[in-house]
Length: 177
Image 1: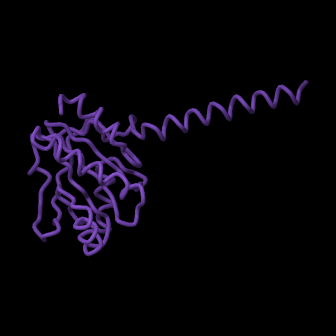
Image 2: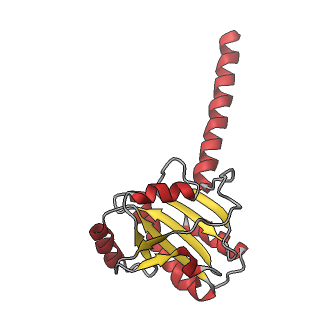
Image 3: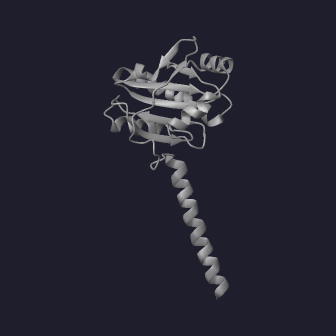
């Protein structure tokens, strides 16, 4: 009887843990991130042409700030969706900005191959500290920060951001196709 009870409790705990993990992995939103609700930190970094771009350049737009690297499989998987979303919603005030924590030549080759249609800023190792300023305390990649039109961080996502979830977030902000 005692062994049966222990077995049942173990099953309940394992099932609850599995459900929690699945829910976390499905949404990836970090709702208790202390960066949510704060004004976005200012920074400037070079793009693939060597021109320094400041985050203020996109004030007034909804910004999807995406920290990524060419050696990161989930990063590479989500970028084609970001390219598509930038094309579909860019004229409504959406701006993707890639923050590559990687070697400039690798980023350039990857961006040209995929036809990335939004700014790709190369920060190399400095990107880890920049990501921390935006709430990524553990240095996970990919990591996406959504900044509203007022410059406030409204959402953060650790791991791959699905196209479906990104579209939901855009619809919540009044974007339409």
